[in-house]
Amino acid sequence: MSDFHLFHSINRWLPPTAHWIYDQMALFNQHQQTVLADQHIDNPYTKVNVHFKPNTALGKLVKRDFRNHIISKGRSERKILFSHFGNRAWLDLEVKADKRIARFYGYDLHRLPHESSHWTDRYLRLFERVDSAIVEGPFMKDSLKKMGCPEEKLTVLPLGVLVDEAFTLRQNGGTPQILIAGAFKEKKGILTALKSCQLLLEAGFDLYIHLVGSQINATENDRIYAEKVLKKMKAGVFKERLLHHGFVTREQLREIATKCHIALQPSQWASDRDCEGGFPVTFLDLMSTGLPIVSTNHCDIPFAVNNKNGAICAEKDIEGLATAVKMILRDENLAERSRAAYQTVKDKFNWEVLKPLYHQNILK
Image (tube, rainbow, N blue to C red):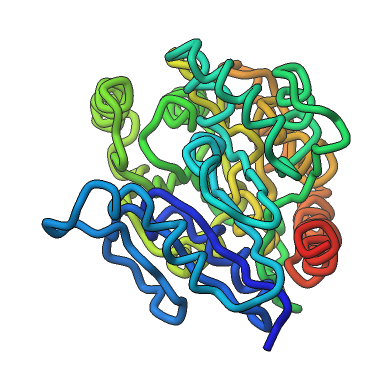
């Protein structure tokens, strides 16, 4: 039996867009692991031990303290509480564990404190109690440090993907295929991407657009934004030039990506301060197929995307993004960018590369 028991605490198990939480669990398959979740939603993951908050007519005390009840039954010498999202980690402060880890992802770091100043004070208390605060990249690290987290407790552990040995080398030739992928949320910049493509089409640039995404986990701000995206999709210039795939699985997205020359993913700060936090894991899935990405200098995106494996532009710079797309598609070195995109993920964001770093920082 392992000397460690890793308890993953999360609000919902498991949203379809949060596969990266399950990926992190896969790094510790040789150890005992248990998921502690308040809500259950349909998902394809069944090979994990999941305990859900009771929703029967049990006493309120049992419902509130179910995490402590489950953890107390563990027989390992060292019980590690891994809370996914900063607000979940704050709710877990009264849960007993030998080591507590808070992993931040994005909205928990910026949108929540923007919505309520209570979270600024709550996080200060959290920083005192946790043993480690994990972030995806240097931007997130600097953000938490400015909020009061001691630097010695901050650890940069990027999210990753599984990387195949083979990839599709993109080269010039044929009608360019542009991929835009993401939930219809303001932070994803879908509307900005469509406007950039509209500029290219109206200028006579021949291209096709694959739009992957839909409205999901929507706030009121997201719903308003999604309406604008749907309206823009109906613009006459996109007739027979835009194929909307809706929501697809991770595997289906990768398959669509192999048919495209470039991805246009202009993430941005939303008006409600929602953001990528670090960078979307979707970027890694796309780049691992050899697909260069045109994106923005938003949060930790430059930690993964640069002007050698894709292109970085200013946020909401519609003309700049269009120019970057045109430049790359006409660049004789498209194949070099494609190879660099794949190599970046293989060398830096490969779960096989990241696994020992996770073990070193979480199990120590």
